[in-house]
Image 1 (cartoon, one colour):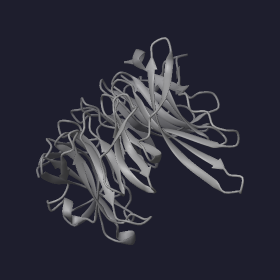
Image 2 (tube, rainbow, N blue to C red):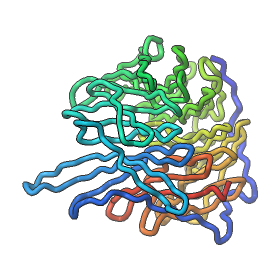
Image 3 (tube, rainbow, N blue to C red):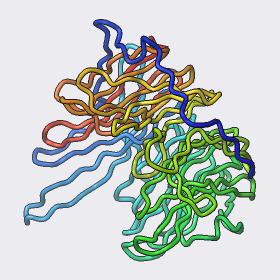
Length: 422
């Protein structure tokens, strides 16, 4: 596979970078949640947002029983913003026989998908556009791990037992056609294959796991119409985590992490373009102490919203022990955003077309958000009494969704309307 090297970080610091618009900020709003009985514990998290602004998530309820035990239930949820009415919540219907359900993502049309529990076992499921009916699309022990823009759905089926050690994945179309993700050297090199994201009907990013104990590794493999290529970064308990973006429809994906090149260990930030086999464009390579380290930040799934359709990448640059948010444009040029007053570290956690990046910073008052665009940062205030837990996505239309928590540890989804800041 050809490798193009853009070079070490060429840091650009506009004079206005990091400077918030005086007196301006945007405050987020909590999304509505279901009512529960007194004494019940309710945790509600958002997991995905469609381009039109439909939000998918799950409500987790813990109930204290009279005998002192606890019971739990998961209720799939969907939210949509209606003009003049605000945010409305829908409890997505469970199929017959299902006691609970969790959501993984949704299509561009807002069709949610996830996992339901039927007769004590999990089954992958997708829902109709109105959320009132579900279709089971997996065998016992299956779950939906990723959703394509218009389908297909990535279905993982694991080995039996409470701890899933092995398992495989397939792509399932709306018509029920199944394509196993196996049969290439890269996919068959591991004992567990999970779809991380889907760029279209014939394009998926798959985590492939091999090794045992501290030697366990996960490698990101790009699959396109039966052919595969492995990204060079390794997610390892020994070396550290790797991070990848969602794969775009043109086969582009960003990745960062440790790699072994010609027997030497290096830390890479790269943009893979052209699908399979494609080309790795290295944006930053570090082989020893000293040079700035550029990378991506993502959740425990190893996938994040840090590659925009126009090629912009959001992440961080760490230099001399200080981590700052950074933005790479489609040509590979990088802008490092200075820390604001009271901030100790920051990273870009979500991006949208037009050079927009959401920055999550750690400051003296905890975690804080801002929107960086054209060298100007606008503070994004959380609802009063709430702190950012995780950022879900920033849409091109300017909707930001994140999960927030209060002092009691209660988690809720919140939304910011940033359309005016495009």
